[in-house]
Length: 248
Ligand SMILES: [Zn+2]
Image 1 (tube, rainbow, N blue to C red):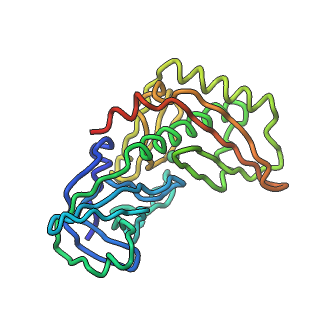
Image 2: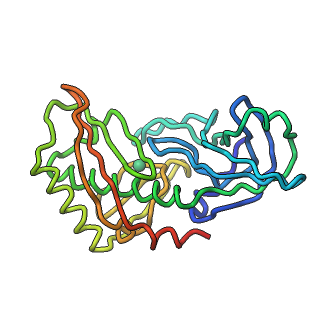
């Protein structure tokens, strides 16, 4: 069994019908879902379920993935595909549900839209950073993308200077103003092994993304000292209205 990932067919779907196929200690698994699970640093979607039988509205406060098939491609990070997607709900409510029941699954599109933009924005900032620090992506040791910020942690003793931060911010904002196309596309051997590309900069990424830099609004870039041998880059975006309106 696997969960059909409708967000890879159309990321702007805000709801779908799902049949409950499995219940585990954290939550519920459906045959398909629009909810994006936590992964690659991106937080999981939140939202609510409507239980068809009773019309009950049940909140889900996280989405994660479990199980799946390992892929080993020479030119791609090892990831798991064809996972089961768990919608985390209250444990007391969990006990009352039955396999085979129908639900409407609805995501919080405001949160997803903001998270999606911060994910694309973080890649754009990395793309600019790599023009001054080539291949720094190889020293990435952590990533987190939420609805209010995106951040990357690097294993480096070489702290980001004020000039570097200013350059990343200015160059990123000018690429945003240019309205450049962003594409995501699958590896030729695995359809869930995805790439993100803007201009000729291409990196593996299975997150959700906007299709043009113009949606990113305005970017602020900061750093944080997180240790002698590590350094954090943080981006924050504003003005997301145009993108949020694309959700169905
Ligand atoms: Zn990514």
